[in-house]
Length: 84
Image 1 (cartoon, rainbow, N blue to C red):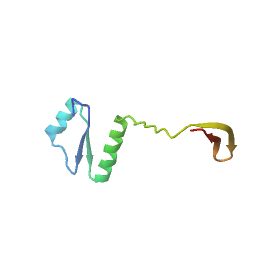
Image 2 (cartoon, rainbow, N blue to C red):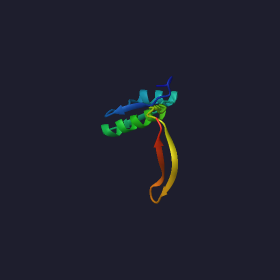
Image 3 (tube, helix red, strand yellow):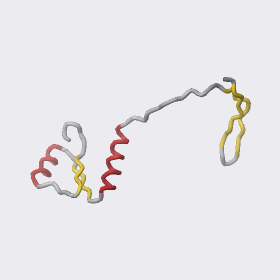
């Protein structure tokens, strides 16, 4: 955990004195959980910050925008003509 900078996740356990002292000395965070769903949510939150979103674009076709309409409570809607 020290080399990667990752926290240690502990479920239904407590670190003994030597482990707590070593973690404090090395600057490693220990997170304790007694409810598994909280642990899972925290792991997901930690991992989601590490990964970049994957962008994927699928080509469907081309269209010409003929006119843009402002619709109340919806926003803008484009009137298009499919060209390909």
